[in-house]
Image (cartoon, rainbow, N blue to C red; front, top):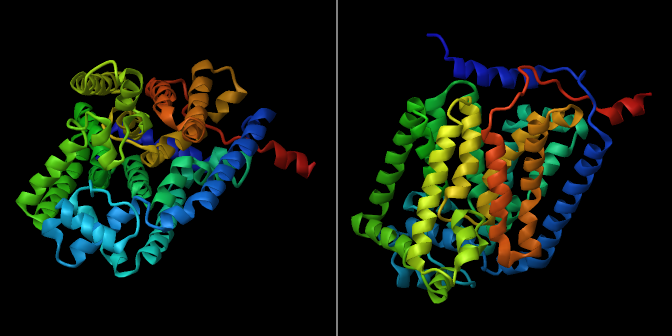
Length: 436
């Protein structure tokens, strides 16, 4: 059976990267300076965040506490009361000394945390931290063929980028599941590169524990008519939904729906949002941007209406403008669009953006050595998006403004560019200077 043109195009790029010799143009000196300085600074931010806040999260004030409690409830026979607020808060206060927050994830994900609940909270937190580091290392290993140009600048640069991306830091220190989602997306990216759309769709369907980020991806692939991908996604989605209902029962499944409503359309006042520790102005997406600019000027109804309308319009626009791209490129574009259109996204959820950022930077870094205006602009939007999470450190009350560089990045990568069929691996000027 012959492969489609789309599959061959996506495969040819991967092959050219992995087999390309180091005979291309050397990048300018400022590229070396930025590649040295930016990751070093961001890793410094990462480290001092750990030094000054890790004791707080070890004390129970981390997102991991709600995941840990959910795992405990599933393991000890309380799955049918997983979204029973009073009981869950009682158990969380008993198991962890920190703040009790609702479990707002689909029930099937609690199975992942059941084994960790065999340990004390502090031991489980450290064990899950080690687990997350392992997942991050696996994602890095899977993505190596798409980081060779970055590695030609400094051999350690790709690894440094994984450690320097601040949403990774947030996911690690909060004990969040965002790194697992990143790994699933990287695996799907590799499958798409091999023409295995069904397997890619299935992996992304497994990521429905972050459904607010995954459903927009599925919607875009539906609009792009990638049916094999949707077949795999649908199979995983049906399995995840059925498993969740089997775990909790129908009544608790409805309780989960009501919980989500209380955290979204019914969270019109600051007091309502305080109950779930969710402030939209900390979300770098359409919802956060509109809330940050218009809260206090519009009612909650009109904010919700504008959020949904603009998010849908964004997805429809990107579906139309990027429809002719290769399937692997479509996934990168869909990831960026989904973060903008998602109803709920905080800094650790931005972890998944590392995939399109790294691939884009590696693919277009040659543009700094040539007259290629749009390609250079695309590269620089990826660099800007890499550092944009710093806004959380300097202006946390205005983190919603990070939606602006995210939108620009999405526009840049959605446009077809003049990327050559063969992308040469950049020469390492420092290595050549050392050898002479």
